[in-house]
Amino acid sequence: MRNDEIPRLDLESDGPLVRAMGGTLSLFATLLSRRGIVDTGEVANLLGVYALG
Image (cartoon, rainbow, N blue to C red):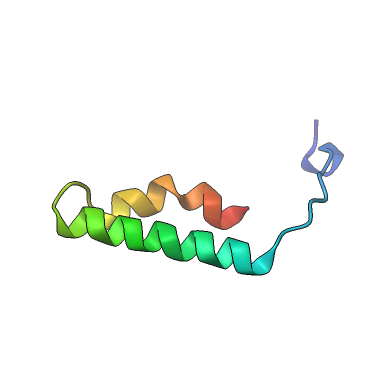
């Protein structure tokens, strides 16, 4: 199956909600990093799918 044959879902998104979720995840990652629990880069890699969506 070629990439152009993959069906796409056309979903509407709520801009303010998406930005609020992104800000919340950013704050969460910063707090985890400051406490030494996880590196910020690791959280960014884990949430990379979120940025592509």
